[in-house]
Length: 128
Image 1 (cartoon, rainbow, N blue to C red):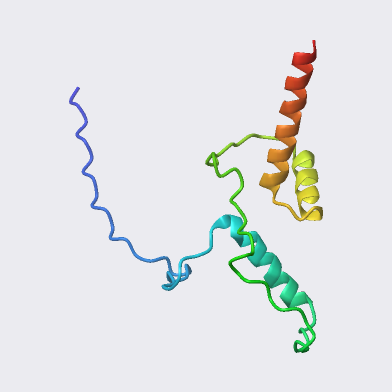
Image 2: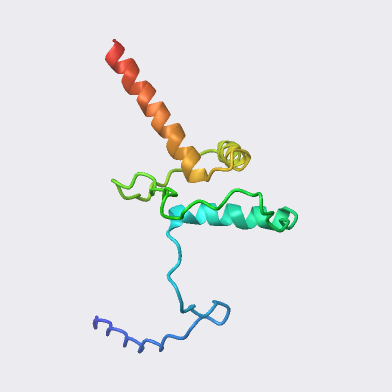
C-alpha cells in the first residue's frame, strides 16, 4: 500500500489589527497594577460625589507630594504565579460576593483565605 503524501502547509496570513480592539495609545505609561485600584476608587468616588466647593482661604494646605508615602506593591519580594483550581459554583459565588462586599479583589480574598488556612494547619502540626 502506498504511503500517504504529506499535506502542503498553507502560507500564514498576514496579521491585521483586530477590528474592535482599540488602537494602542501613545503617551505616558500606564500606572502599575497595584496603583490602579486607588485610581479606580478615586474615579468612582469622584463620579458619585457632588462637585467639591471652591477651597476657602481657611482650608489646610495640601501636603507636599514628596512627604506622602508611595504604596508598595503587594508582596514585592515575590512575583505572582498563576494558580488555577476547580471549586464548587456556590463557593466561588460566596467568595466573589465577599470580595465585592469588602472592596477587595477575588485574588486578595483567595490569597488571604489560603494563607490563613495554611498558617493554621502548620500551627496545629507543630502543637502536637
